[in-house]
Length: 247
Image (tube, rainbow, N blue to C red; front, top):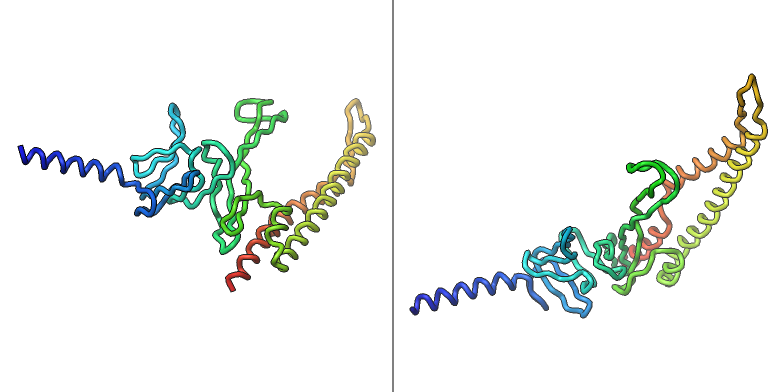
């Protein structure tokens, strides 16, 4: 009888130890989730699950489950993630790609739909989808903001070098807009001129491509190539801000 009692206690302790593998507070664990109420739950494995017939959830050490809506930040083997919008989807969190010392950069992906007429894998005329990265930043572990000129101008105002890069970004953006307008304008005028200069030859229409179309296409093509190899000034402004603080 006594042996049975001790055996029961041993089994109870083993079960308790298994269910408490994910610990709260200052418990041990390589990874964690932080809840909206500030509570931190540590674990050695943090997974985001999206089953077909069940609700999305975070699974900690194969035992504890948390609804994504109650999680504000989490860290697992893929990196550190912070919430950027309400919801239970994985895209509600942004992954950190730059870690300070003062400015952190994050990104998440969004699915965009193009309902224009065109071919897609399901036939003609249906929406085409694509994934687009959205970048955010956080200063001094504060809230996340969209990484654009206006927000960075306020956050980096105390660094002259970063502000100079932001000024160049604004100037380059104006130049790019002007070049796009010129290139598109030449294409449009060239297309109209090509149609007007077309001739009927032996019952068929002969279209003479206007040089303006070639010029417009060349301008837009050159602009695209230059922008592909040009480093983003917004990212440079953040990098300079962090680098000068490290010195």
